[in-house]
Image (cartoon, rainbow, N blue to C red; front, top):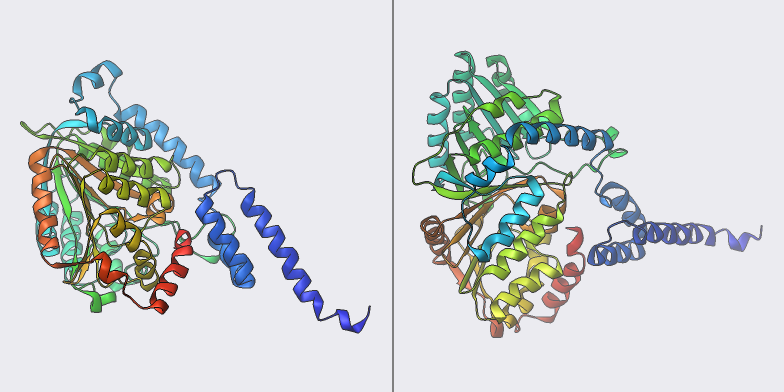
Length: 481
């Protein structure tokens, strides 16, 4: 071979690989146009990095064995926990017409229907949540189930661990499921070992290692936050088991969250989600616990649990958010720490503002993820031009994922407004169809608004050209973040 051709061989190999990868990307069964374009840009722009990234995180691969196990446990627990259709029809409260699409989508994604007779208390302080949870664990008689993305070994982590140890030592079954990546430090800690010695079952969800890369995507994470005590009391929301100063990222503190403490029928629905996730990572079936009746709270509110993840029809979560945006008639108030929406979600929010709904979005002024913060700002011009009232929270990192609609519907979630929450992570949300609860949540949202600064369209458009170029360039890659 002519010696002059040898230097061209690496370039030719890269070109062939680029064509192969682009062919694979274009042949996906459920293509996402924005993500497809972003991947092609990366493959063409930085091919070696692009090849490696696509092999690691390009496909939503949960693993065949895990998917089969999930189908099996869902089949078993849904048949066990769901009353006959005629009984279920009698239990269902009447959902206002404008919210029926939301309720139907919520049911389609996770089999959980709207149920009446629930007591819901909002908690916006990490110390208060820890105090209440420890009190409930100390009163537990049968079991304590905790599922959290992040468990830190700080003061709150120690308080909850001490309560679990006390419960286990008096014969209460205690199970703690934490995400293998989000709680990596905790799983290696002395506190984790102490819990195990006390009799608490500590399990890592979705273990991540090099061996698993070939079979499943390692960045699919269990982002849920759930606690169930005796099948009668439950917690969910955006709080992790961590203090507000959040030690790993203390410079962004305090971290502000909202969770709910619930009693009533939806406790069983949260238990169902825990039972599913526990089975997936342990092979231990806890379905008999679904026979526990959480009871009905007199004069309680109507609420619905919505679980989502890459092992289900996850498009419904995105569609559910869109249905909520379209249901608003007068006011739509949203808080989220990570705002990297797909085009359809951003358009739905803008559409609400353009049709006269007072649409407010509150995001942190300082974000712990620099790329996400830059990508978020690539949407500002579009939002402001449509009339969205955009505010940046100044007092630490606003981590609460909430929505209120017309002071009638409240939504508290673990899910952010980004593709990761919609398509990749295991998430859980609770929708509360009650004006008093919606007003309570709105009061907390307004308190965040009072500590935020508005972003004005005129001032925003005066930012420098380098910032605009950088934000828009990162925005192109936002489907991959």
